[in-house]
Image (cartoon, rainbow, N blue to C red; front, side, top):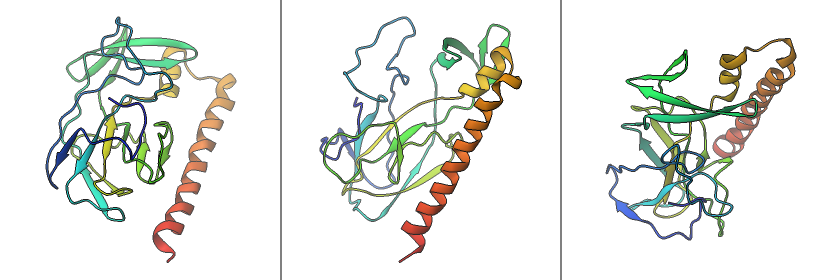
Length: 206
C-alpha cells in the first residue's frame, strides 16, 4: 500500500482495457481491525492500493473506471465533535447504540498521480482524481478522469466521511451550530464555483 500519489511508483499490476481489479485497503487511519494499532508510514495520507497500470493508456486520453462493488468490513469509524465513534454493520445497516443508518459505501479516494515528479498528498482532489469524496460513486457507477501519465497508474482507497451528519445524530444541531453549518455550505458553494471555472478553462476554452 502507498500513502501518496506518485508517477515514480512502479505499478503493482497491469490490466488490459476493460479488465477488472479487486483489492482491499484499511480505513482512513490505516486500521484494518478496530483494536489493532496499524503500522502507518510517517506522513502518509490515505492507504491506497496501487498503482495499477492500464495497458495502452496514454496521457491526454480519458480513463473510464466502473465501480462494480464496494464492500465494507463489519465495523467502521466516524469522528464528530472531537470524539471517535465505532459503528457495527449488520446486513445493510450501520448501528451505534440506538442509532441506525443505511449503508451506502462509496470510493472516497481514487485517481492518478499528477504529472509532476515526487510524492503528492492524497488529501486534495485534483483534475486526475484523488480525495474526491463523492457519495454518488457507489457500485454500478462509472468515473471518467483525464489521464495524467502514460499507463494511467490508478490508485484507490475507501473513505466514508459524514461528520456534520453525525454531529446532528449525536446531539442535534442547534442555533449554536449555525456558523458551522454556514461554513460547510459556503465551502461547498466555493468548491462548485471553482470547479465550474476550472471546467471552463480546461475543457471549453481552446
